[in-house]
Length: 226
Image (cartoon, rainbow, N blue to C red; front, side):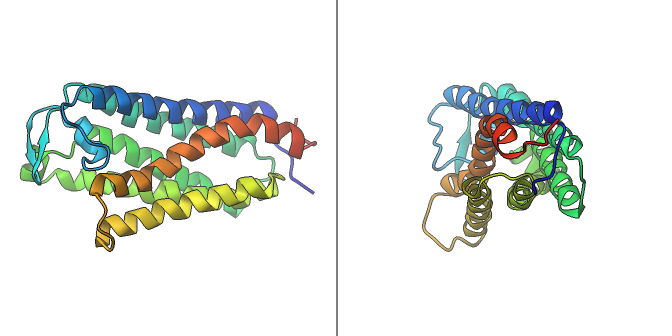
């Protein structure tokens, strides 16, 4: 029998995840529109957040709207994801070890995303050594986020979510982790920006899908919700 949950908290979590995903996509698009010649396939996402000009690994940096990406795409997105994670965890009547692990991974992802927005990934940061903090933040965001998606499939199953949703969670998480592995190993001749987005966008897609699905799933699959 599906476990029950606190419906208002679950709906709040869904709304926050949906807002986080849409905020990220909007911020990225706005920042990219102010970056001459920006390529979603070749440029890294963090190029949009470097608030000064320069060159990095052969890429020219010209992000005139870096503040939009750093605030909306990273800091606000991470904060919303953290708030959604807390609300979702609070919504569960039975908080087992799987739910705790999912919440921890969600917070790791959120903190990493915020760190990426605070510590930039440009040539100045490489020169002074703080770039390592940027790399750590990115690893936390990507690894924590995609792992959270996979674990979330099990939590969703305990809530009575349909198989198609649980499979979607796992597929998105595995796609994100596989894309990161390909980015780091260069096993396939694909552009770095494309592979990086392959590791980040599954999390964004999950945010939006989950935000839309929660109201439906809460009513149709967990009759004991209150």
